[in-house]
Length: 252
Image (cartoon, rainbow, N blue to C red; front, top):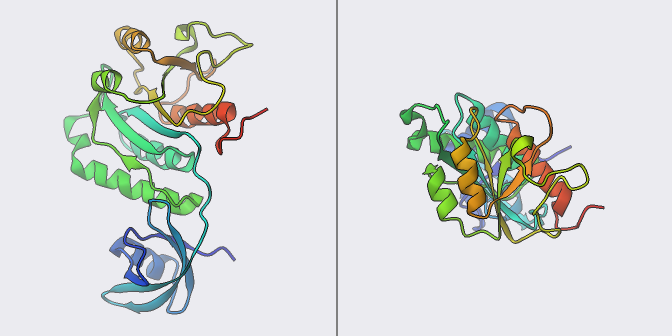
């Protein structure tokens, strides 16, 4: 039987209280009781086998039994820059980008973003962080991606200290693309860090593409089909892991 996993940011001491949301999930959804095992992770790469030491109205206390070896993180720390999307689409991106190995999720505003200003207040960031933690628990990661404060597209382009910088574009804009080389400009081996920019529902303005390419970004084509904005990040990350190997082992 699979042991449930919980995010415990304060893990590390011999005993700790689960956060309120995790305690509610453990007691009311999973219906675990005192003595039941679970796995806790701190979101920074630490993971432990634990056991429920006590359940009360005040919360759930767990004892850490022994450290565990978490699943490997990708060799390349990818920051996913995503143009702000409407409704639950951002939640979908955060959930799926966490499951597909993003190290950082960086929302940004660009020319064609059509999201009201109040959508990127602190409460939205807090919600995205909860979603990232929940997705990490579900997929087995011991690392919860950081969620950056919303930035401007121009700022990301001008101030991006990454080994490789990539902008996902439509096939017609991917200069140099051809069937024999669908990833022109990408290094054959995984870099230490990479920034991947994916636009909003309305796509990029021509000026934005030119600005990114002029700054040295590599164009990445995601195929001939029109993808929903919340699906494009997963396709982009999958394509990169296919080229680089998620664990650093080259494909092919």
